[in-house]
Amino acid sequence: MLPVQYPEILFFLLPVIIIEMACLRMQLGTLLRRTAIAVTTANLFTFALGYPLAWVIYKGLNATIGFPSGDNDIFGHLWKMPIWVAMKIYPGWIGLQQEIGLVLFVYLILLAPGYFLSAVAKQWLVDGYDLLAFKGSTREAVWTANRYSYIFLAVVGCVLLYRAYTQM
Image (cartoon, rainbow, N blue to C red; front, side, top):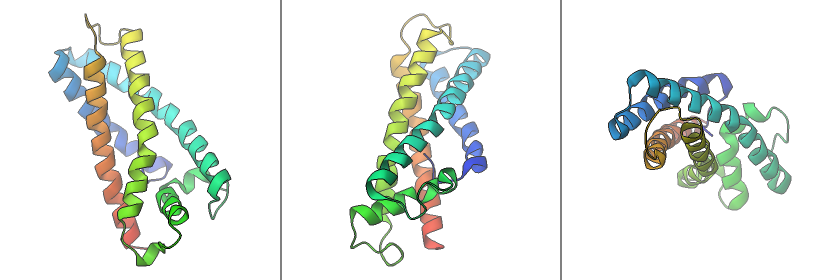
């Protein structure tokens, strides 16, 4: 769940695909075309799962702590979620005058469900449908590739949050 709105999030799909392709090719020695098709298919599938997951998380958090905008335009306000959650968890933290560390920590916590869901879904797709045509288990390689892509998403998300926060 990157702190960006819908159209811009599509720009992050390509680097994730490239990172995961490189990782899987290095670990498994699979063919470039087969790996590209497998990784692209798995990432489009998990991207499609990501928005319902974000919606469920947003609705659940809104029901328990109440966001300033309520249920209006959920996907237009997803990037603000770490800031709102930080303000609700620690009321003494008054957003604009405090350090951003708490917001970044909350962002990383909110990123965790997507990490696990995407890794499980990718593993299911790659092994279940034999997308890589690899003899043997791809479990470790798929989880490692997912880990590297989420490290990228975590770093980029923290940078984007920091920039947005300091410009508020």
